[in-house]
Length: 114
Image (cartoon, rainbow, N blue to C red; front, side, top):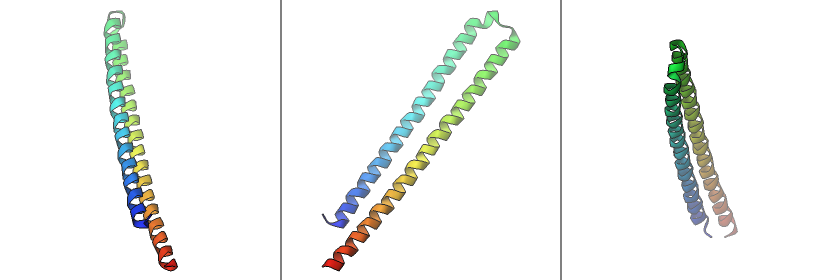
């Protein structure tokens, strides 16, 4: 196979991998956000049901705790998804460079043998 054709095929495969990986990361992010919303609603329902048995201070502390937990979760989700995107972009870039260099090396070898 011609090194240029092989390089083009490898680059297309690498681009497809990068695109698919970004789609998976987006799905992870959206799933995490949906989970956070579901947990927040569940917490609020539980707090509302138990509210008559709690003092105002305990209700206030429980509501504040939920906000703090949600904030940490949201930051952790964003940090992990952003980090994964950085890793994918780095790997895709490095793989493209490697494919280009391998193609150039193969072409140089073909010129020497021709």
